[in-house]
Length: 179
Image (cartoon, rainbow, N blue to C red; front, side, top):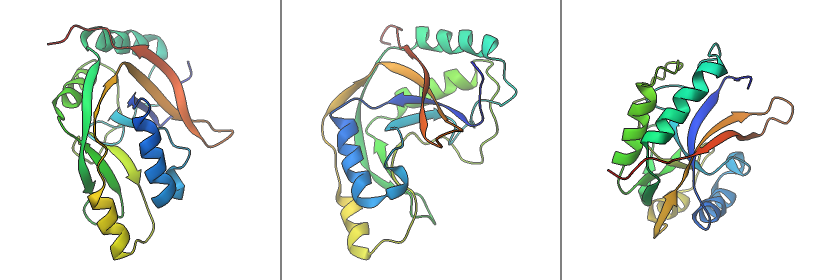
């Protein structure tokens, strides 16, 4: 595989939760309409995207090792968070520890990553830019997506240079044993 920068390491959100996030995005953010519904575990915070100079032949075995050590993650969304000084709103996770664990495994895997100026904060993006009315802001903060879901795959997401769309370019099942 030809790694393109940025290439993010993600955990895809399954349906029906994926569709619920898409509904919120359709209401509040044109920019994310066609963006994958996922939790980025390497790329947007903590460590950056996989280095553009990385060699796929050495990266893939390291990703497979992380998958072999990581059990499928049972998760639920927490409340809505607004990143300070921005119009970016995200869903937090009810229990961030499994996501912090996989982030640390990736960070310690030997895969070269670009730097990131932000500390790791696992989340699912709802909205990224544009002005909001006070009523819209209140509505976003009141949103909840209830229920548990299981994340079974680690995936790489990258922007297609021809279409400009972000999509999955690789995935592998999480096969580790629960801790």
